[in-house]
Amino acid sequence: EGMTFALRRVSFVNMLKMHVGWFDEKENSVGALTTRLSTEATLVHNLVGPTFGVFAQATVSIGVGIAVGFGFSWQIALLGLVLSPLYLFCGMNSSK
Image (cartoon, rainbow, N blue to C red; front, side):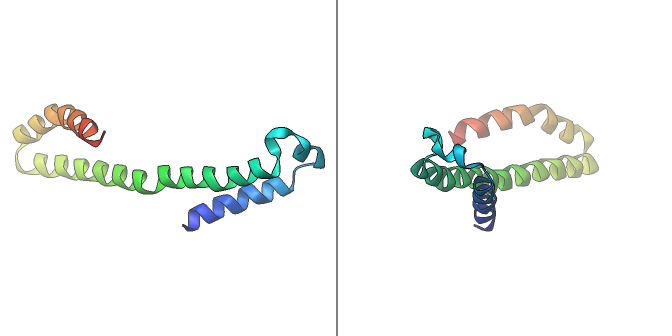
């Protein structure tokens, strides 16, 4: 929520710094700018927030799993590395 507020604030401050003629353009009307402030910040938050967290968690889990696997048995770790593209493919299909 804080990131969304900060992004909206920065966007609004940058809009205020534009020259007066910029606001006369059709794509920069009051309604368009208000819509842009409300939707674009939310889209960025939805992309970066939960999605990035899941990606970071999965990446760290795979890395730690491979390291532990090599620590106990290099043969099983090698098998896990060979099968990891299959795991990723199945995970991507199940999330759709």
